[in-house]
Image 1: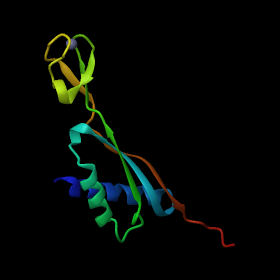
Image 2 (image 1 turned 120 degrees about the horizontal axis):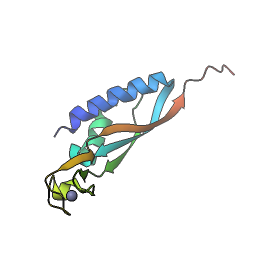
Image 3 (image 1 turned 60 degrees about the vertical axis):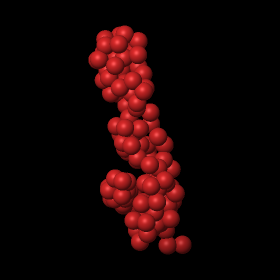
Length: 120
Ligand SMILES: [Zn+2]
């Protein structure tokens, strides 16, 4: 269960990003999580919901997109799913796979209400 720690980091970034973009409230957050991060989306969503209660991200919808873990063989250049084959290339059987995708966790976009300077 490292989702709580991840949710904490995520909230920190969300708050900073929201302030930098003059958002007074965050309505939706889209994040991309690599398969290798081994995150349980429901657990991350729940942790985030609890932690964000008294912040500008309270009640925000968290959209989680899972990114496949991919490896590329540096011998024959084949790209293949890392979780199934690991470092061993399914085509040429050499152990020269390099992970090229699936270790990320980042915010794709944030949506919310901007602070209005309009007095009308
Ligand atoms: Zn290969």
